[in-house]
Image (cartoon, rainbow, N blue to C red):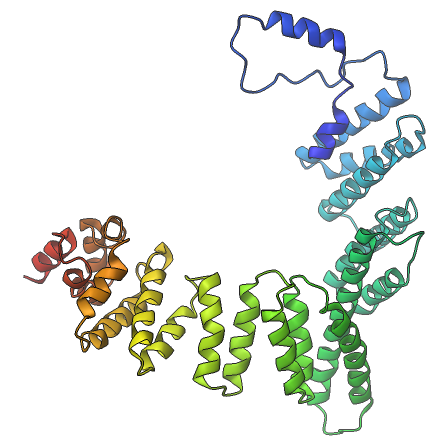
Length: 423
């Protein structure tokens, strides 16, 4: 609605500003400015501009009140604004027409696929600035209605489209078009794979079609994934196809590059995908811990940190046990894990193993030094004790056994309530 607000507001009148500023002297400034009248005429506004502005105001009112038929009727008149050659805002009007038209179609109860196709084709030929993004949106709509081949055709046309000197923004959009076109190849490949699994003929036409779609998708995705960015669904699609054809080394290389290439933005999902792939292929614990170590830095509250702490706990290294303690404590720093029995049990197991070390008290106190002021309020209040005793008595028992170890210098109400409940 921001575009509508900017468009509907009439040009400012300097005289009005002076009167307004004079009248406001000596009074406290309002927090919210008073809106100008929507229909107020100004000396710079022609009759044509006034009629189109009023038309847009009616469209806005209809949209806000979900009167989709009324909005569609007014919208049929508004494109005449594109004939305005004076204001120099043709691109703004084109984008406004694009967004409002598709919004009305999305909600109009009688809209048909043909209506979408007509409006998208008209929008594509109204100007070149938004051509690629309109093509992409058109393909999304076709995809939602199950017209995968038509969606791919739209993207193929957009992929080959060129206009003037290619700008950096246009190049980025072209890469996005290429990526989504490859994703549609993957979807078609998946459909063929499903059909192929249900037949006993290994040399059927579906098999050849499958391979064609794989070749088209893999060539394009390989090129697209060299560009820094967040490509999660495209990566998963590419890896699945590579695995199907037993290209395990290539799949591992793709995932490694996605996770560790410094030109890419930090992406926790990249490390999650790599971890699951390595685990699926029985990688060593050392490799798994290497991946989870990076993920821990990015998202210390991630659910895989429970698995990371388990791997560290299985290690015979003294430092790894202490790392496991830090990992689980950091999980419990987040409220989402506050009532997790598994996490508290893991903490208890780690401390039990730490007690075999002579300096375990110093290690625990060192980890808790920065937490002692706020952890009790997060985990060990009377309210938590009452809640845990009702909802999860086992959790209450585990937490109560750790209070004296984690906070030895504090008289915690959690432990007092627990004792009262047990008696």
